[in-house]
Image (cartoon, rainbow, N blue to C red):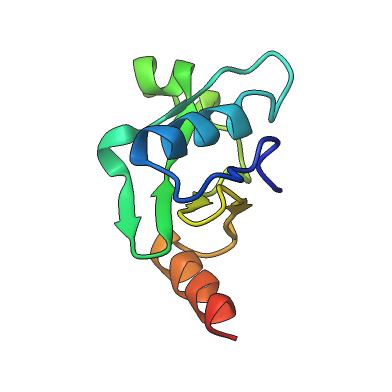
Length: 104
């Protein structure tokens, strides 16, 4: 998924990356509000990796409030482009796979 408003003016700031992440997850599932887990953000040379979950899970820790298939989200530093990472593996492995694809 690409950022609906790429940044033609240059490098993305951390604040803009967070806004892009929030925009990207806002409408993933009708009727479900997602929130970025800002304290779990990973900064890399190519951008940021954002973890997110449902607001209900964040507030209640009720496993029934989780939405399967919502893996980490990358926001690229140079363009604001986004990519949702694989959910079939742990986040660390998904990040490794993404970085391997980037190097190609």
